[in-house]
Length: 186
Image 1: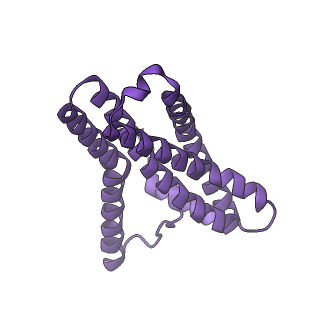
Image 2: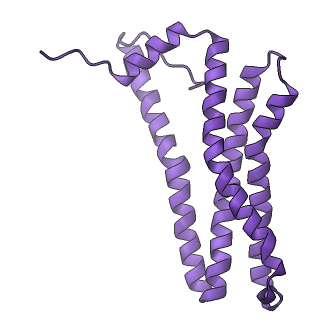
């Protein structure tokens, strides 16, 4: 006998009906923090490495282009660190103030900004090292490919999924099907 399987969309809408706004905000904030926890470890390792580079013996031999690449990598790693740590710091300041939904929306923005800064830091630090090891064309090509891959996997593909879901929901609503629409908070 085959059981009726619950599709993720059905399960999601059922869960939504059973959650209050505050419960959804709490869940969303925990999910945002879990995602940031993954990224912040990598950012902190990269940032720590970049902080040590100028103290190595070969740094003084770098040309101006490599110094600017290093600068961009270091500053963007600092920005990414700030953005990924901001939700936790703000949660401490806003603790028990009833501002969880505001914090969720703000934390999502910080997460996106942190991811963009991380793309810049990863790309420029990789370009910095490859330019030191090889020639500038190899560094530029590699950095371009890495930036394109990160932008696609982190932003492009999810943006397409969002637009697919929006068009699916519009079609369902215009045909009278699918009376439950998921929250944009998820």
